[in-house]
Length: 326
Image (cartoon, rainbow, N blue to C red):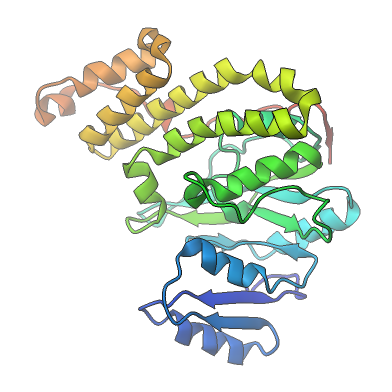
């Protein structure tokens, strides 16, 4: 963060009764960079969301970014994002592409979600949130801080069964439904994958797919109340959104086949069929199911299974209408 080319920043750090040396490290940075840090320390672990509320309540600037411990900003991230938000005052946030640092410490860059820098106008991005995780890292977004509760009607603090893992996705949906959004295809964020990543818990319990699938219906209900003029558009997307999440489950199955976690791969394959039974006719499902049905690991090792196309995005998509190029 301190390597950013944009210098007018403040780092809000709330230590949630950590048991490592995080607090000592934060204090050293505070001394090294005077007037750049605002530090708080909880006497006990209050849970992730209450801790988030503590630092969020201290916001004074015009923009904010929630930096995950698994993410690293490119030095020009904030400068580029702020410049765009200053130029386009009606836009609520900037979303950037990300690259991956894998467990071998190798940098992997997949195709950006959209094939150009652009401004996305409602309800295009919101419709896509029914189907896909556009920004899997919450650190991919720099937000404009609303100065009035009427600017963005998004219940960032509400609790519920989906909120622990999907709070920011829900928030982003609500914002994009009422505000233009800037998308930058440059990978201005690096996300590190490792065994202790908090997302592992969600993956191992199918929450990534089950939660995203459930959000379809929460989003539809929100549109029904807040933007009824869009309701017909959203309801027409329900069937394709359901099938899309089933295909996502199949991609997760392929991912865990690559990691030789066949039990979890089988669970995701079955989940894909539970969400969209018609996938049983697809070539990808048949290949994965036949592979997982092999009796022994030795037999699996001799089987040929081409799943590369399921492991990473290889193409970028046109931005949804309405949009304007940057």
